[in-house]
Length: 151
Image (cartoon, rainbow, N blue to C red; front, top):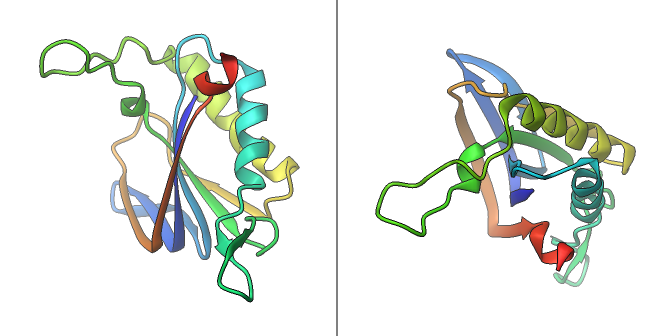
């Protein structure tokens, strides 16, 4: 699994002109599911993100997690994170998991964030054309790839 985490003061995702997910202070998480990913990767990533300490404490040090600040999460599926750009100039998306597998793991990941103490988790619409807006706080952006932990 691949995830791009952006610390936000607010974020929302719209589909067909209607807001389908909206949060205040927290994380916008763009999530890509790679072929071969399982519930194990979803569990690892959800736990890691819920505990990721990138909010400032009283000393202005990044020392607080999403759960520490009672933050929220907006999770948006993004298969383009799985792009293979090794050859040519047109990315290949064959590393992405099949849509049914990817959707199930995307939903499981969101549920696992809640299980890991995140107060509110909103979602985009899997496979839809979405418009995502955010106020990036910092900016602070972190990239995760569960392949790092497999090695």
